[in-house]
Length: 341
Image (cartoon, rainbow, N blue to C red; front, side, top):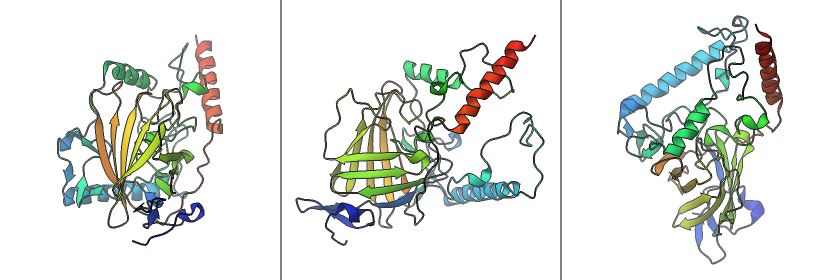
């Protein structure tokens, strides 16, 4: 590998080289842009049981099904096609529901995760069943409370007279409020989502920054540092890192009451490992430990392939127009419900 001196302004342009430390040692430079999209789900489909690996035929089938779905979505997105009926998205039972994202914008990747030459059935590798461990009693309460907010859209204020899920901005999810990316894209752990899966790493002598395309999250990892005092809490936690040989190990604590990881608590503790593969990609692995929510730790791993694509601004911001529409629409539905005989 090429040896380079450490200059903060030059590091952003380096990739696949080594960073020279003050004491003369060198470590891999992880700087670069990575596309973490993968068709491998976080949790393993039950049909695979304890099998961590897909056969090449199963992986090819999954890729073909995704391509067919995207091709169908592209045809449905053709503006020359007729629009769905008023008040619905054209699907069965969709009256009053305009649907979600246009398939054209969804980018879940084109292949399953390939680790050590084998396709994975899930990102989670421990426990053996590829599932998160059973929740604690407190975890069960949190999950039940979260899911109680969601019901089928009937076009009326089913929560009336309240309280309801749309009472105020603070009652909406952190991703709805554009504070954090959904699906824990900013992490930790850092997980893929439906789209905007680019991650940009810039590494200096004492800091590693990871810019996440989704909702413009930016993680700052301080190298060879101490954690902040316990009373200092952060949306993405407090991340400190150190090198174990060629592997960057990142320890994150000090989360706020609602971390990006769905269901987790302020007691969340995540350890991540970043190591470079021979092809320039990264192997990203993590272990989650939150004794408040899960009865045991759980772990996973998947590759981060290099890409020449660039990270563009994500124009989501707190107090956006959609939030105003959500709250205003809820008030209208509540008024209609109150006026009904």
